[in-house]
Length: 208
Image (cartoon, rainbow, N blue to C red; front, side):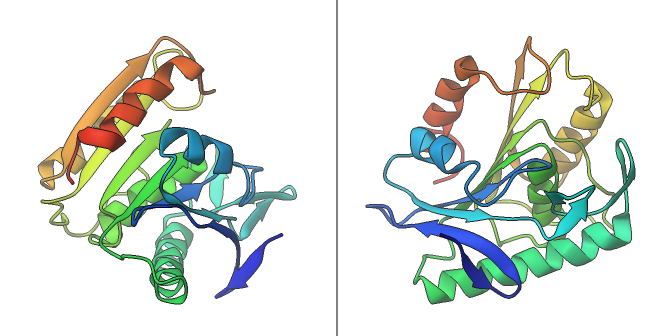
C-alpha cells in the first residue's frame, strides 16, 4: 500500500542499514516497480520507491516529453525541484540520513535522477543510471565533487542514442563527479548480467 507526501505516491521499506536507495521507475511504472531490484542490489538499504506525477497516455512519468527523446525542459526543471523537495521531506519524515541517499533510476527515472544531479547537487550522494541520456543542459555547471554515478548503457538501445549517454557522462565528469560507465550488448531492457557490477559498485566502489 502506498503512502502520500507532497503529492507523490511512494513506498518506504525500512532496511537494516543507514543507507537509502531512491528508486525511480521508467515510463508506465510505479512506486513498487523497482523494489525487488533495489533489494537485490543492496539487501540492507532502506528502499524509497516513488511514482512519477506526469501521465502520458495514462502511463506515469516523472516529466513531460514533446516527442521521443525530446524533453519539455521547463517541466523537467520544475519536476526535478519538486522531487528534490520530496526527498528532503521523506528524509525528515522517516528519519533518514540525508547524506546517504543514492538513486537507482531506469530510463525516464534515470533521466530525472541525472537531472537531480545537475540541478540539485547534494541531494544525492550517488546515482545508478540505467539507460540514461543528458536530460538538459544546466545554465551553470554544478559542483559534483564528492558525488559518484554509475551509468549503465546498452549498445543496441533503440531509445537512447550513444551520443546522448556520452554527453551525460562528459558533463557529469566535467562537473567533478566520479563516473563509472558500463556498456552492455543489449538494448533498452535490463539484464541479470549487468546487476553484479552495479552491486559491487554500490558495496565498495564510488564515493562512500
